[in-house]
Image (cartoon, rainbow, N blue to C red; front, side, top):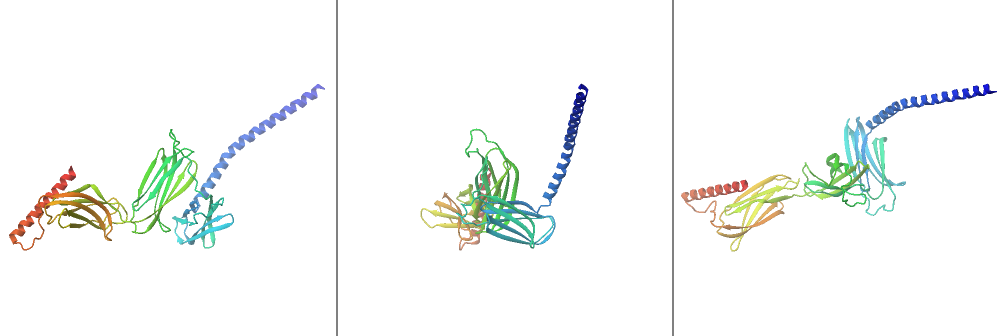
Length: 395
């Protein structure tokens, strides 16, 4: 009776060993297959991404921003933006692109222009973008968001502003409680996308990628194009945090205007004349004059004007004025920069004492000899004035 029991035990052991060996083989075989499957799947995803038309789509309660790229030429193309809440469509806008070329990239920004208090009681919105060729949908993408913009977890945009010269923004590190920490908070990696819009048209854009923010980060971007006076512009800044993956948008609107500044450190006023340096502070070209008004304690007010160069942001012009027929005495001096519309854009005030009057350039009824002497005197005054100006700049 013992032999059959031993044989059964041996058979059971052999079966168990065979099953264990088969299991190990299957595990090994599967581990060899998985990387191949992952590689094929990854290649498929990469190929799918390369064929995408919509390469960027963002939306919040105020606006929607999209960037599309066409790998092939198309005709009768349109971009359709829609905003809905639940089953209700709130807004819809269509941009007709007509024909597009191969590898053409297009960006569009659309403002929803909802009422300020509209939809605060709604849980969420859904924005959707359709890329169409005629009635055929080439691609679509949608995103959902709540009424209030999301906040960056460890970063805060302290300030964002724009004017006729530039856009500037300040971003700082904060704690989760939105309070400054005694110790340095965790740094972040951020992408910045800046656009300048005139109406619905994007006239300038600039991107900064993978910017490390380890402390307060301040950036100024000057507009490299001319702006139209008295026209409304909108600057749009998108901030994308890498960890967590989150994008927020900020807007700054401004009216373009001429703006110049008198450099107080580069003004020279003496008994022979005045030298005034003016610098542009706007991409709206300044066209105007520098006016100097001399007001004595007694007597007539004297006004001198000189045309300045056309100035844009960052450009300077030094205007020189020679006094003519200014009597001896003390004067209050007011320097104004005036545009062609008569608007005073900047002013500077100082005082002046004239010890020896400068002769008139064309004195009436003089003999040729006297005229020659007057001209020689004026030339000497100009030479002395310019010499003083050069010495002043060297000092």
